Amino acid sequence: MDENGISLTPTARWLGYAGLLPQMICVALAASGHEWQFTAIAGGFAYAAAIFSFLGGVWWGQALAGGKAGAGAYLIAVMPSLIATALFLPWSFGWEWPGPALMYLGAFILLSPLVDRALGLASADFMRLRVHLSVGLGVLTIILGIVAEAIV
Image 1: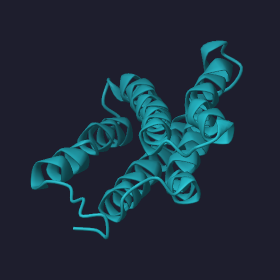
Image 2: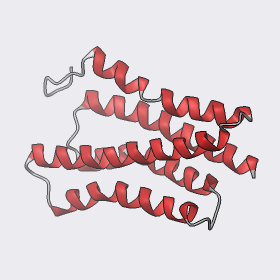
Image 3: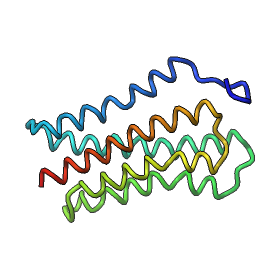
Image 4: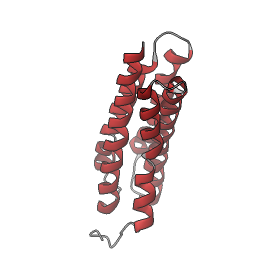
């Protein structure tokens, strides 16, 4: 329990950690040379982009619930979906392979708890889980980008 008396349930923690499984599967399939490796790379990007966009929704919700956030918090909250879309565009137009976009996306996810800390709206228990999950998903997404680059 944190200083506000808020604690995440064990179910919330387990489901949070289970959220790393799809990216683990994508990394394993991409690295295996399996016929689904390109699908795994695309799926891994889509999953990471969806989670990153979801984080923006979390920030928006925390700003609303906290009632003390200014316009800057809402501006920051819309950035993950805009960044994820921007990272997808070069790949979708065939301008460059997805490896660099995956590495950037992974880095943004890895650093995203810094936004939570700056906003100051998350409970301590939630922040611990956020850091674990963001490090996990961020590193897995960067690894997927490295694997994608090695395939080229």
